[in-house]
Length: 504
Image (tube, rainbow, N blue to C red; front, side, top):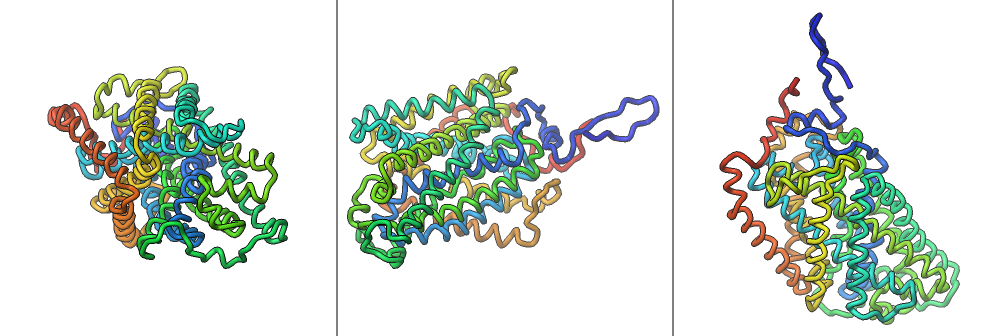
């Protein structure tokens, strides 16, 4: 903490250190309520765990195979470059407006509270859909397989998924430090559960531990189950990376829990995206080159398990699955905490129904317990909706894929509108002269991804989720929030207010 100069006889006024984040918090009109305990590695772990190359590859590897064969893995680096550009925008905004509620706060302050409401609601919808997609689609069946339940009933899968959804809420209620420890461990389980096993399979293939009918040329094989025009198949295969390399912005949502957020947030975001893109590609090459029989693998419910089962003993496959399940569980731990921060941030600005209750922070644990509990129930309801659909994959995974890109697009539009204003805010990361090329690229790239994920047939169920979300957001906006905004009892100050001097 630094002190301002004082006249003799006058008390010294202390101000937060410029890089602590509390100075911006003060200018925004808030008092610090969350405990600043997360340092760089924890911020990196949050972004890396929520990206979860393990989950993304397990959930979508088979989808890529079915549309563009083994060559689908080469869509991964293309998406990696595009999403790194998005991460640059997130890094700069995160260092200049280090407030909980990331997408809502940035959009509301850069444009207006109405715009911020719809962007913030999209963020809530994304987090509500994502956890259910992962638990119902993969984690629950995998966990049951660990206990030799290989053909579980849908009801059993749903029951286990519900339990897996509730545990992260409990962990976050205890404290953010406990949640951070889970995510710190998840960094290593991600690497072991995907990369190490991918490299192991590559080595076994290289030393001809078992016979295979393919050489390295399988990496470029486009033989697939579904037969579509090349451009269509290639676009859908891109879901492998488009679904996976997202969520890194949730590190910015934890800014008010971070120590020195103007440095730890951008570094955590950029390192997480870069490391995930590189390690994920290594793992994909290892798994793909080790395919023993393409037709068998493409028809398997979980192709990666079919590949691993051919090369590895049963006990080692079970170890592999254990790492995968823990990595998926860690996504929910960080996702639940980030979702609660977004709810808390919107509620303290009176933007949500029952804001008075949702913004309450428990004095002992310094966590938003009411927000955690309420949205834990909402998340379960969304998962149950997906469970009742003909294709829970297309409905939940499709929605989880497209919503982040909608948010990225809307954030970047807001960022473009006030780029010069944000330049006057202190920050540790600056795009400088590269800002506008990055902005233009991100806008074009996110529009392309949204079109692919909205117009193609497999994701029409996801379009309904988006439509329902828009209707719900509009109902509350016109049914209650607009009145609050007109009265001045809700909303935020414009970004220009953050550039002024701190209040003494």
